[in-house]
Length: 260
Image (cartoon, rainbow, N blue to C red; front, side, top):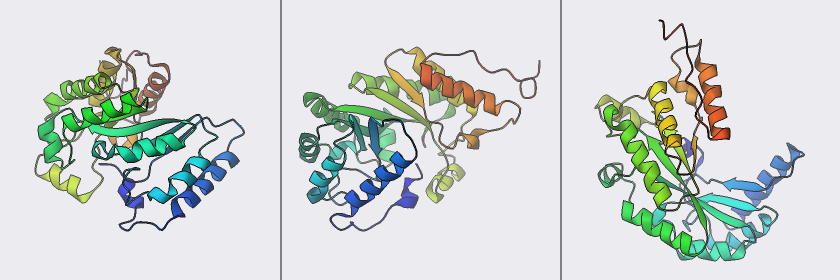
């Protein structure tokens, strides 16, 4: 349901390759800004604590490279949170944060999406992280496959609430996009309904209005929801400002697409 699959590999990488990539990335990052960099995110097209993706032997090297940052954020499947997570956290002088895809607070839909975890699995992962003072953030999909449009906002809010009840430090809500052949097939069978920008904005407004914690609307490829050139940039700017301020702004008006 995202585009990271386009930049991954089906084979494990040799020891030392991941630290080399991270070292290069940090150097590139520093070359682009004179400002001090306090936080770093490492998203690796999979789960950081999948030993097929990140070799255990590389943990010490990676932790050393990240020692200058205050916070390190990695992404992981809830079922892979465990001993390897605690081992890596013990090596880091930085604060570790785990980004996990809750996706939706529905066991039925999680099963149909083949996510290979249940809400109970997600909750257990959150309990373990909390016990060891490791922060976590959640990803929630807006209208994933098998969700009817009239259920979109209710399920999104339920999912956001579930994440915060499990101790999430923040939640990113992400509009579901048709990015793969499988998603296109689901659209053709009627199992995936196209989103409107109005639905996305309403979900974001309502999620912020819960006042449970920091909620961000992911702007990645928001242009695919564009239907009106006259107001799209203003609506996008509204979302960006709301992301930064965590305040609900007046809705954008447009005489072109909202006459009268």
